[in-house]
Image (cartoon, rainbow, N blue to C red; front, side):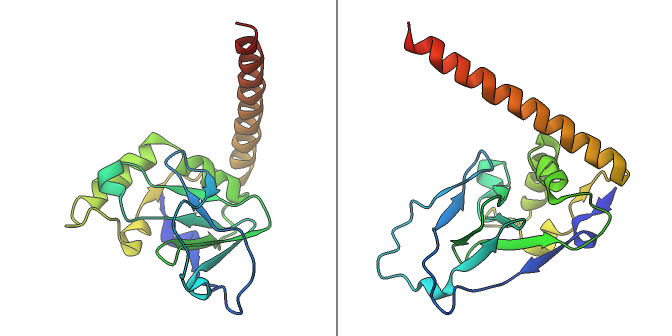
Length: 171
């Protein structure tokens, strides 16, 4: 087991000078989605830039929701609320950022984070406590195999979901 603090580092690139990038958030399914926040009049120069291969997380409601909304950006760039933490893999002990993304999607990770958030009066998980969360870190080869297997299963799920949608059309 290894702490996240040994594997990741926070990134704090602000949208200054102002760029026209999509404004996204991370939902409870741990996927990026278009932001539903009203940004009329908001100072978008304070928003944080997320680049491909970086993660964004909102640690504000971990206790309430019992999950950590965290996701890996697979598109070019976007901006997220200044309330988000943006980070990237810093260590060569990780095969690809996708390995961490798989770990972040696990119930065990959410449970560990939820437990640590219990000491906060507001139900958030402080960044410093997030960094103390521990994950299992197999060898680089094992990580790469797990990523491949995970992606294969995800692809099969997507195909079956599309087939199900097509079948539903005829019912």
